[in-house]
Image 1 (cartoon, rainbow, N blue to C red):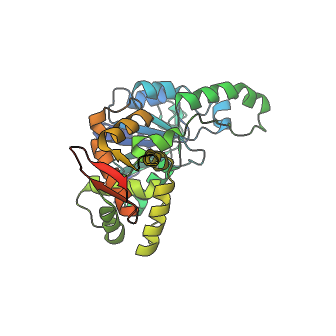
Image 2 (image 1 turned 45 degrees about the vertical axis):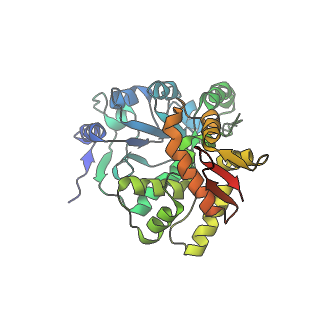
Image 3 (image 1 turned 120 degrees about the vertical axis):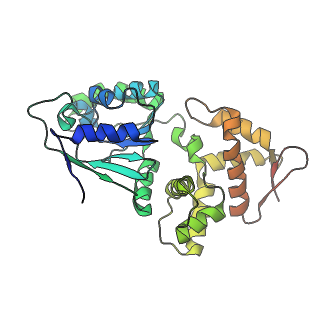
Length: 316
Protein backbone atom coordinates (compact mmCIF):
# COMPACT_ATOMS: atom_id res chain seq x y z
CA UNK A 1 0.00 0.00 0.00
CA UNK A 2 1.34 3.43 -0.96
CA UNK A 3 1.56 5.86 1.93
CA UNK A 4 0.78 9.54 1.46
CA UNK A 5 2.62 11.94 3.74
CA UNK A 6 0.64 15.06 4.60
CA UNK A 7 1.87 18.57 5.31
CA UNK A 8 1.18 19.64 8.86
CA UNK A 9 1.50 16.03 10.00
CA UNK A 10 4.39 13.99 8.65
CA UNK A 11 5.43 15.39 5.24
CA UNK A 12 8.44 17.39 6.37
CA UNK A 13 9.73 14.80 8.89
CA UNK A 14 9.50 12.02 6.28
CA UNK A 15 11.20 14.21 3.69
CA UNK A 16 14.01 15.01 6.12
CA UNK A 17 14.44 11.30 6.87
CA UNK A 18 14.70 10.60 3.15
CA UNK A 19 17.27 13.37 2.67
CA UNK A 20 19.35 12.09 5.59
CA UNK A 21 19.60 8.54 4.28
CA UNK A 22 20.14 9.43 0.61
CA UNK A 23 23.51 8.72 -0.96
CA UNK A 24 23.58 11.24 -3.84
CA UNK A 25 20.62 13.59 -3.83
CA UNK A 26 19.22 15.64 -6.72
CA UNK A 27 16.53 18.17 -5.79
CA UNK A 28 13.92 19.47 -8.24
CA UNK A 29 11.71 22.32 -7.03
CA UNK A 30 10.26 25.23 -9.05
CA UNK A 31 10.19 27.62 -6.09
CA UNK A 32 12.95 27.68 -3.49
CA UNK A 33 13.26 30.01 -0.52
CA UNK A 34 16.72 30.28 0.99
CA UNK A 35 15.71 30.01 4.65
CA UNK A 36 13.69 26.83 4.09
CA UNK A 37 16.40 25.31 1.90
CA UNK A 38 18.97 25.89 4.63
CA UNK A 39 16.71 24.21 7.17
CA UNK A 40 16.36 21.19 4.89
CA UNK A 41 19.95 20.60 3.81
CA UNK A 42 22.31 22.51 6.10
CA UNK A 43 24.88 20.03 7.33
CA UNK A 44 24.13 17.58 4.52
CA UNK A 45 27.01 16.50 2.30
CA UNK A 46 25.00 14.25 -0.01
CA UNK A 47 23.24 16.91 -2.12
CA UNK A 48 24.81 16.99 -5.58
CA UNK A 49 22.55 19.32 -7.56
CA UNK A 50 19.47 21.51 -7.22
CA UNK A 51 17.08 22.43 -10.05
CA UNK A 52 14.90 25.54 -9.85
CA UNK A 53 12.54 27.26 -12.30
CA UNK A 54 13.56 30.90 -11.77
CA UNK A 55 11.16 32.46 -14.24
CA UNK A 56 11.38 36.24 -14.09
CA UNK A 57 8.03 36.53 -12.29
CA UNK A 58 9.11 33.93 -9.72
CA UNK A 59 11.96 36.17 -8.63
CA UNK A 60 10.09 39.47 -8.96
CA UNK A 61 7.21 38.21 -6.81
CA UNK A 62 9.53 36.61 -4.27
CA UNK A 63 8.45 33.02 -4.90
CA UNK A 64 12.12 32.07 -5.27
CA UNK A 65 15.33 33.57 -3.92
CA UNK A 66 18.36 34.32 -6.06
CA UNK A 67 20.46 34.06 -2.91
CA UNK A 68 20.30 30.27 -3.05
CA UNK A 69 23.10 30.35 -5.64
CA UNK A 70 25.92 31.70 -3.44
CA UNK A 71 24.71 29.46 -0.62
CA UNK A 72 24.77 26.32 -2.78
CA UNK A 73 28.07 27.32 -4.36
CA UNK A 74 29.63 27.60 -0.89
CA UNK A 75 28.57 24.00 -0.26
CA UNK A 76 29.88 22.73 -3.60
CA UNK A 77 26.36 22.00 -4.89
CA UNK A 78 25.51 22.65 -8.54
CA UNK A 79 22.48 24.81 -9.32
CA UNK A 80 20.54 24.50 -12.57
CA UNK A 81 17.74 26.63 -14.01
CA UNK A 82 14.94 25.16 -16.09
CA UNK A 83 12.04 27.52 -16.80
CA UNK A 84 9.81 24.56 -17.72
CA UNK A 85 10.19 22.92 -14.32
CA UNK A 86 6.93 22.30 -12.48
CA UNK A 87 7.46 18.93 -10.77
CA UNK A 88 8.82 18.63 -7.23
CA UNK A 89 11.01 15.64 -6.52
CA UNK A 90 14.03 14.47 -4.55
CA UNK A 91 15.99 11.74 -6.32
CA UNK A 92 18.52 9.51 -4.63
CA UNK A 93 21.03 8.24 -7.22
CA UNK A 94 18.28 8.70 -9.83
CA UNK A 95 16.94 5.40 -8.49
CA UNK A 96 14.45 6.26 -5.75
CA UNK A 97 12.24 9.31 -5.56
CA UNK A 98 10.45 11.32 -2.91
CA UNK A 99 7.66 12.88 -4.98
CA UNK A 100 5.70 15.78 -3.54
CA UNK A 101 3.42 18.67 -4.37
CA UNK A 102 5.40 20.96 -2.07
CA UNK A 103 7.88 23.60 -3.14
CA UNK A 104 10.73 24.51 -0.81
CA UNK A 105 9.05 27.25 1.21
CA UNK A 106 7.96 27.68 4.80
CA UNK A 107 4.22 27.18 4.24
CA UNK A 108 4.68 24.36 1.74
CA UNK A 109 6.77 22.34 4.22
CA UNK A 110 5.48 23.85 7.46
CA UNK A 111 8.95 25.08 8.42
CA UNK A 112 8.69 26.51 11.01
CA UNK A 113 5.30 25.13 12.14
CA UNK A 114 2.53 27.43 10.97
CA UNK A 115 -1.20 27.25 11.63
CA UNK A 116 -2.10 28.10 8.02
CA UNK A 117 0.28 25.73 6.26
CA UNK A 118 -0.40 24.70 2.66
CA UNK A 119 -2.20 21.44 2.01
CA UNK A 120 0.53 19.36 0.39
CA UNK A 121 1.28 15.67 0.08
CA UNK A 122 4.24 13.47 -0.74
CA UNK A 123 5.09 9.83 -1.29
CA UNK A 124 8.05 7.54 -1.85
CA UNK A 125 8.62 5.81 -5.17
CA UNK A 126 11.14 2.98 -5.01
CA UNK A 127 13.08 1.52 -7.94
CA UNK A 128 12.20 3.94 -10.70
CA UNK A 129 11.79 2.39 -14.13
CA UNK A 130 14.51 3.11 -16.70
CA UNK A 131 12.25 5.40 -18.71
CA UNK A 132 11.42 7.36 -15.55
CA UNK A 133 15.09 7.80 -14.67
CA UNK A 134 15.81 8.91 -18.21
CA UNK A 135 13.05 11.53 -17.94
CA UNK A 136 14.87 13.22 -15.06
CA UNK A 137 18.22 12.89 -16.82
CA UNK A 138 16.74 14.68 -19.84
CA UNK A 139 15.53 17.51 -17.61
CA UNK A 140 19.07 17.83 -16.27
CA UNK A 141 20.59 17.82 -19.75
CA UNK A 142 18.23 20.59 -20.90
CA UNK A 143 18.80 22.83 -17.87
CA UNK A 144 21.12 25.83 -17.66
CA UNK A 145 23.99 25.56 -15.22
CA UNK A 146 24.11 28.65 -13.02
CA UNK A 147 27.60 30.12 -12.89
CA UNK A 148 28.94 33.41 -11.58
CA UNK A 149 28.54 34.73 -15.12
CA UNK A 150 24.84 33.80 -15.32
CA UNK A 151 24.13 34.84 -11.73
CA UNK A 152 25.61 38.31 -12.27
CA UNK A 153 23.51 38.76 -15.39
CA UNK A 154 20.39 37.86 -13.41
CA UNK A 155 21.27 40.43 -10.75
CA UNK A 156 22.02 43.11 -13.36
CA UNK A 157 18.83 42.53 -15.37
CA UNK A 158 16.43 42.18 -12.45
CA UNK A 159 15.76 45.93 -11.87
CA UNK A 160 14.72 46.38 -15.50
CA UNK A 161 12.51 43.27 -15.36
CA UNK A 162 10.78 44.67 -12.28
CA UNK A 163 10.03 47.91 -14.12
CA UNK A 164 8.58 45.95 -17.05
CA UNK A 165 6.48 43.62 -14.88
CA UNK A 166 3.94 42.13 -15.62
CA UNK A 167 4.94 42.36 -19.29
CA UNK A 168 8.56 41.46 -18.79
CA UNK A 169 10.47 39.13 -21.11
CA UNK A 170 12.65 36.30 -19.93
CA UNK A 171 16.22 36.99 -18.87
CA UNK A 172 18.60 37.36 -21.81
CA UNK A 173 21.74 35.40 -21.05
CA UNK A 174 25.00 36.02 -22.85
CA UNK A 175 27.20 32.99 -22.40
CA UNK A 176 30.89 33.83 -22.20
CA UNK A 177 31.50 30.17 -22.90
CA UNK A 178 29.18 27.17 -23.19
CA UNK A 179 29.85 26.43 -19.52
CA UNK A 180 27.62 23.40 -19.16
CA UNK A 181 28.88 21.79 -22.36
CA UNK A 182 32.39 21.77 -20.94
CA UNK A 183 31.68 20.08 -17.63
CA UNK A 184 33.43 16.74 -17.20
CA UNK A 185 29.94 15.29 -16.83
CA UNK A 186 29.25 16.36 -20.43
CA UNK A 187 31.68 13.70 -21.61
CA UNK A 188 30.44 10.13 -22.15
CA UNK A 189 30.42 8.06 -18.98
CA UNK A 190 29.57 4.55 -20.20
CA UNK A 191 32.65 2.31 -20.45
CA UNK A 192 32.11 1.67 -24.15
CA UNK A 193 29.60 2.17 -26.94
CA UNK A 194 29.02 -1.60 -26.88
CA UNK A 195 28.05 -1.41 -23.21
CA UNK A 196 25.65 1.44 -23.90
CA UNK A 197 24.08 -0.48 -26.79
CA UNK A 198 23.62 -3.61 -24.65
CA UNK A 199 21.85 -1.68 -21.92
CA UNK A 200 19.77 0.22 -24.48
CA UNK A 201 18.58 -2.85 -26.38
CA UNK A 202 18.32 -5.45 -23.62
CA UNK A 203 18.12 -3.36 -20.41
CA UNK A 204 20.84 -5.63 -19.03
CA UNK A 205 23.32 -3.97 -16.71
CA UNK A 206 25.90 -5.15 -14.21
CA UNK A 207 25.08 -2.65 -11.46
CA UNK A 208 23.43 0.69 -10.76
CA UNK A 209 26.58 2.61 -11.64
CA UNK A 210 26.62 1.12 -15.13
CA UNK A 211 22.93 1.89 -15.62
CA UNK A 212 23.28 5.48 -14.39
CA UNK A 213 26.20 6.05 -16.76
CA UNK A 214 24.12 4.75 -19.66
CA UNK A 215 21.14 6.93 -18.76
CA UNK A 216 23.45 9.93 -18.47
CA UNK A 217 24.74 9.33 -22.00
CA UNK A 218 21.29 8.74 -23.48
CA UNK A 219 20.18 12.04 -21.96
CA UNK A 220 23.08 14.26 -23.01
CA UNK A 221 22.99 12.88 -26.55
CA UNK A 222 19.16 12.95 -26.59
CA UNK A 223 18.67 9.33 -27.66
CA UNK A 224 15.02 8.29 -27.20
CA UNK A 225 14.18 4.78 -26.08
CA UNK A 226 12.87 2.24 -28.58
CA UNK A 227 15.01 2.97 -31.65
CA UNK A 228 16.16 0.10 -33.89
CA UNK A 229 19.90 -0.56 -33.78
CA UNK A 230 20.69 1.28 -37.02
CA UNK A 231 18.84 4.43 -35.94
CA UNK A 232 20.40 4.23 -32.50
CA UNK A 233 23.91 4.29 -33.94
CA UNK A 234 23.04 6.99 -36.48
CA UNK A 235 21.65 9.34 -33.83
CA UNK A 236 24.48 8.61 -31.40
CA UNK A 237 27.20 9.29 -33.98
CA UNK A 238 25.60 12.56 -35.02
CA UNK A 239 24.97 13.77 -31.46
CA UNK A 240 28.40 12.73 -30.17
CA UNK A 241 30.50 14.37 -32.87
CA UNK A 242 28.37 17.54 -32.91
CA UNK A 243 28.71 18.08 -29.14
CA UNK A 244 30.77 21.21 -28.46
CA UNK A 245 33.16 19.50 -26.06
CA UNK A 246 33.94 16.77 -28.60
CA UNK A 247 34.22 19.20 -31.51
CA UNK A 248 36.69 21.39 -29.66
CA UNK A 249 38.70 18.44 -28.38
CA UNK A 250 39.08 16.97 -31.87
CA UNK A 251 40.43 20.29 -33.15
CA UNK A 252 43.64 19.23 -31.41
CA UNK A 253 44.14 16.70 -34.21
CA UNK A 254 43.93 19.21 -37.06
CA UNK A 255 47.62 20.05 -37.17
CA UNK A 256 49.57 16.90 -36.43
CA UNK A 257 46.63 14.45 -36.76
CA UNK A 258 47.46 13.05 -33.33
CA UNK A 259 47.21 13.79 -29.63
CA UNK A 260 48.98 11.95 -26.83
CA UNK A 261 47.23 11.03 -23.61
CA UNK A 262 49.10 13.53 -21.46
CA UNK A 263 48.31 16.37 -23.84
CA UNK A 264 44.66 15.32 -23.96
CA UNK A 265 44.51 15.31 -20.17
CA UNK A 266 46.12 18.74 -20.00
CA UNK A 267 43.66 20.17 -22.56
CA UNK A 268 40.57 18.78 -20.83
CA UNK A 269 41.83 19.89 -17.42
CA UNK A 270 42.40 23.41 -18.76
CA UNK A 271 39.12 23.71 -20.67
CA UNK A 272 36.61 22.03 -18.37
CA UNK A 273 34.32 24.39 -16.46
CA UNK A 274 33.91 22.31 -13.31
CA UNK A 275 34.28 24.18 -10.04
CA UNK A 276 36.43 23.18 -8.33
CA UNK A 277 38.52 21.95 -11.25
CA UNK A 278 39.16 18.22 -10.85
CA UNK A 279 42.72 17.06 -10.34
CA UNK A 280 44.34 15.62 -13.43
CA UNK A 281 44.48 12.07 -12.13
CA UNK A 282 40.73 12.20 -11.49
CA UNK A 283 39.93 12.55 -15.21
CA UNK A 284 42.11 9.67 -16.43
CA UNK A 285 39.15 7.30 -16.79
CA UNK A 286 37.09 9.97 -18.56
CA UNK A 287 39.77 10.30 -21.24
CA UNK A 288 40.08 6.53 -21.63
CA UNK A 289 36.32 6.32 -22.21
CA UNK A 290 36.47 9.27 -24.59
CA UNK A 291 39.17 7.58 -26.67
CA UNK A 292 37.12 4.38 -26.92
CA UNK A 293 34.02 6.28 -28.04
CA UNK A 294 35.86 8.33 -30.65
CA UNK A 295 37.41 5.22 -32.18
CA UNK A 296 34.20 3.17 -32.12
CA UNK A 297 31.93 5.88 -33.50
CA UNK A 298 34.49 7.28 -35.93
CA UNK A 299 33.90 4.55 -38.55
CA UNK A 300 37.59 3.90 -39.07
CA UNK A 301 38.67 7.55 -39.08
CA UNK A 302 40.44 7.32 -35.72
CA UNK A 303 42.63 4.79 -33.94
CA UNK A 304 44.60 4.47 -30.71
CA UNK A 305 48.07 3.02 -30.28
CA UNK A 306 50.94 3.29 -27.84
CA UNK A 307 54.14 4.13 -29.75
CA UNK A 308 55.90 5.01 -26.52
CA UNK A 309 54.67 4.99 -22.94
CA UNK A 310 51.67 7.23 -23.63
CA UNK A 311 48.57 6.29 -25.60
CA UNK A 312 48.06 8.22 -28.81
CA UNK A 313 44.77 9.06 -30.53
CA UNK A 314 45.34 9.72 -34.21
CA UNK A 315 43.59 10.10 -37.53
CA UNK A 316 43.95 7.09 -39.79
